[in-house]
Image (cartoon, rainbow, N blue to C red; front, side):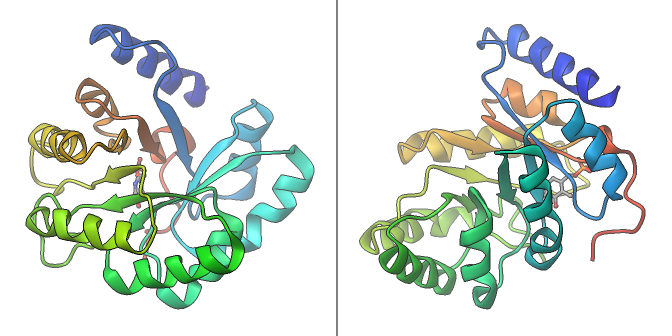
Length: 219
Ligand SMILES: *Cc1c(COP(=O)(O)O)cnc(C)c1O
């Protein structure tokens, strides 16, 4: 089964660079996948999933939580400020903190409820105009602003440009995280998770390699 395969490849990638086996978290990205594919992976015992759209996730996961028990849900898609409240109630981690207005909204929610999901700051390592994320040059100031609002991001996340070697982007993200004392590194997808692990990823986000091709493209 694909899940076992991916886990074995992750263990091999960890061993290859002298990292502890099992130290990298596999986020199974289930966006737009048919329910039976997700349920097959749940039945195999996997409990860490990623979703891109708040509404889609809110429609699917409460019932699976009731049926399969505790599981860990990661928000990996762009988060609209007006969906932040639903998102913090549903997700255990948000990987896409990428702008001051969202930080301010999350800070307000933290004050109101006393806690927040784990936060990762998305960095636009390729400085692509169409892509979300804080520009590398703006990261120090953004992190400072977050901390001033009492937000404590645990790591950084990136999606390298599709047409480039991802390795330099992963290396750059790892350097930025180290510079700021952040231990989490959310990087690596179906095509490049082994490279990401070699560069220190703590969380890889793998969708199609586990579930098969998505039936319709992400918006
Ligand atoms: C869809 C998605 C993934 C998974 O992509 P695959 O190539 O199917 O593994 C990972 N990260 C983000 C941010 C995504 O939107």
